[in-house]
Amino acid sequence: MNIQLKKKPNKPIIIQGFPGFGLVGTIATEFLIEHLKPELIGEFFYDELPVTVAIHKEKLVKPMAIYYDKQYNLVILHTILNVTGYEWKIADKIVEMAKLLKAKEIICLEGVASQAEQEIPTANVYSYGVKNAKDLHVQPLQESIIIGVTAAMLLKYPDISCFFAETHTSLPDSKAAAKLIEVLDKYLKLKVDYVPLIKQAEEFETKIKGLLQQSNKTIKEKETRDMSYLG
Image 1: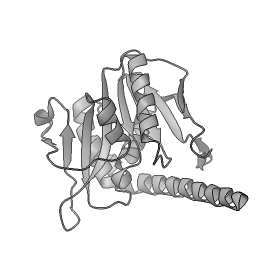
Image 2: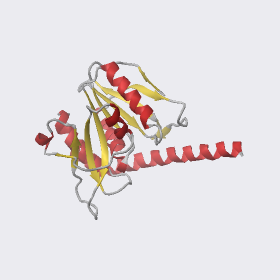
Image 3: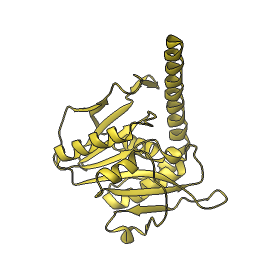
Image 4: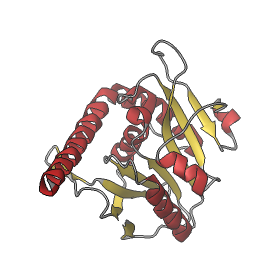
């Protein structure tokens, strides 16, 4: 697995959003890409995962893409693939890229399971490693279990900043992702008009859910074919 970059921004802030609980990170980075219109500057290339690509509204969607927004000097990592089993390798490559670009900060966007017994009307956002979290009126995450790429990143690169949106479901939760964008907007002063993003939440949720379902279906079909060859 490798990352190939067409451009190498100097001292950017890296934002990562991988499929996790509620698909919050993936949906949130999709929000950013739709709003900021960043430039595609790189991709993850790999032999470990099935070769997968999606087409949405007649456009090619890169499975693991890297975007750059010059105005805010942001590098955005976005994926529609199920990367279970390859979290360590992905974390290693992100850390390598961060060192190459002399990144100012790595921000992980993630979902975290709600402790509430019933669905919550408005998602709470928690932080880990964020210095001015109190100014954002965000509470530090006190107790939780983190899995996936974010967990690997915390172990590989402990100085990262994390924002966790509380979600009551393992299904795509676009409202939690929109709340995450609201906090990120205040943190980075992006001037994102997140109100219409909340209204568009269901559209993003449907898109991401469809892409991931198709990706998972393709992976299962490949595994079935591989087993039939062996049998």
